[in-house]
Structures are given as structure tokens and as C-alpha cells.
Length: 288
Length: 81
Image (cartoon, rainbow over all chains, first blue to last red; front, top):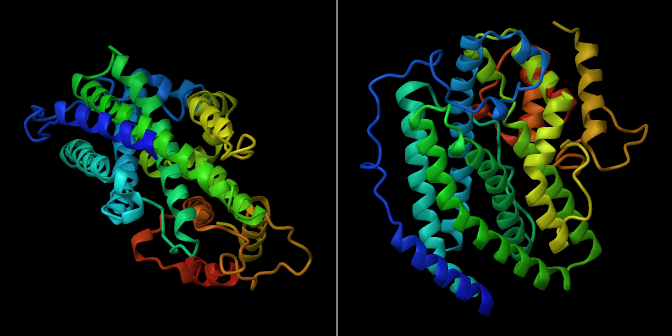
């Protein structure tokens, strides 16, 4: 825990230094033209490399990219809602006292990210609904803790790969570049924290847990990788982009070789970490 | 639109693909899916997509409860009636 406390203290200093007001950072344009500019990098589109992408003309690709930006921001909003619930539930817990200072920053920063994501969606598009439904947990608290931070890490690592690519993409509208770049800069700290916490919780938990518990953790983490990626193939987005048969399209895109390859490449860093730490022993079979 | 038997076949096949459990001949449309540990709550978003695709219409998840996914029979009544 000493190392976590040092990491937490260091990240707290960095967060205080880059503290921001999300209501003053952006001059929101009056309107956007979805068919004239790019809002998602082509390579980050869920249809890129598929026959459906090839059939689209340039304005159609940009229109899809616009709605995919709103879809990406929406899945971030829903992910951050769950994250904020989990973080606030762990504030000031005695056994997590070393983390509390940084949990405050994370909570604050996740809320601000959602202000940006929600600002875009509500001004120019819509917040796409989530298909997640909580059944409540019945696992021991230490197992739930590890799963919470592991899922957070998986979600944030995949998002961050998209953020990095799009923050650098000069084709993108400046607003889209800003939202991705700002998120990436803040998430870089969260990822350092998340890896440290997951490594520590796994090390202390795995030595005590039964084989069944360990198998359950591994199965849940693997299933979450697939669940995370599934959200990027959103039929509601395709329908708004005026594409026909949106559910069949989501299924076809999910199975397309180019998309399997993209998912594998974007997940590689996260999976390397989880495998190296011992949380996973193999690649999630149905994610790619 | 698929017939009800086709929808049931699709749903059972999906559960068999997703479940880590070894589903024998006793797996049927009344077998508890989540309570019985065949599926995890983490599978729900994907299951909703499957249901939407089979019925060709969106589902408002905010209006749902875990009991709506109890077993294949329940889902047929809830989403395809």
C-alpha cells in the first residue's frame, strides 16, 4: 500500500495543477455541419474497413462519423455514471484510506468529462441510451472492489486509445479534437492509478481466494472486454446516420475482419497489463 | 419477422454460445438464465441487442427489470407478445 499512497499523492498534485472549469474551456459553436466536417476519425469508425463503409460516399461517411462521435461520448457518459457511483461508494472507507484523496480528484474529473460529453450530445445530437442493466452484486466486498477497478481500467484503456488517435487527427473538427485530447490528458493519470490499484488488489486477493472465485473474476473481466466493445457497434447510431437494417449492420460490422483487428490492436495494451498482472490468463475468446 | 419457434431457437443458441456452463439436454425455455448462473448481468447489453434484432425494434432498457430476462419463456412474453 505504501507505493499506492505515493502514487496517489503524486497524482493528486498533478490533478490540482491541471484543475479546470469545464464551463469556461469551450466556446460551443452555434451549430455543426455533420456532412461537411469530421467528428470521428475514419479509422475509429465501427464500420471502417467493412463493405458498408465502402458503399458510403464522403458526406455519408462524415454523417456516420458525426453520429458515432455522439455514440462514443454517450457510452462515455454511461460508463462514467457507473464509475462515479463506484468511486463515491468507496470514498472514506477505512480500508481504502490511502486512496481517498485521489478518489476525490477522479470523481471530480469524471464528472467534468461528462459535462463535455453531455455538452456535445445535448447541443448537437442526443445522448444515446445505455443497454446496461444492473442486477446487483452478491460477491464479497474485496472481490467487488477488484472487479470495479478492473472494469474501470478496461473501459478507460479502450476509450483512451480512441482519444489518443483522435486528439492527433488534424482532419477532425477542433471541438472533437479538444474533447478527445482533454479526456486523454486526464485519463492518463487515471490509468496510472488504475493499474497500480488493480495490481495491488489482485496480489493481495488472489493469494486468499478459492479457485472458484478466481475463475469467476477472470470470466467476469473477460466478458466485460466483450461488453465494452459491443457498445461501439450501436444500431441507434446507424439508424441516425440513415443506414438501413441497423441491427444486422451492427452484427456484420462486429464480425468484419478489419474490425476484429482494430479491437485486438486497441485492446493490446490493456490485455498485456491484465495478463502480466495475472488477472487474465488468455485473450477473451469472443471479443475478437 | 421471424416466427416464435425461430425466435426461441435463436435465443437458445445465443445462450448456449455465451454461457460458460455445460448446457445439457435439460436446458429449455423455462431454465433460469441469470439466477441459474448460465449468464452474467454483464451479458445483458448484448442480449438486448439480440432481442432488438430479432423483433426489429428498439427496447427501452430504462423500463426493464432483471425479472424480464428470467428465462426464454419470459422474454418471449415480454418482448414478442
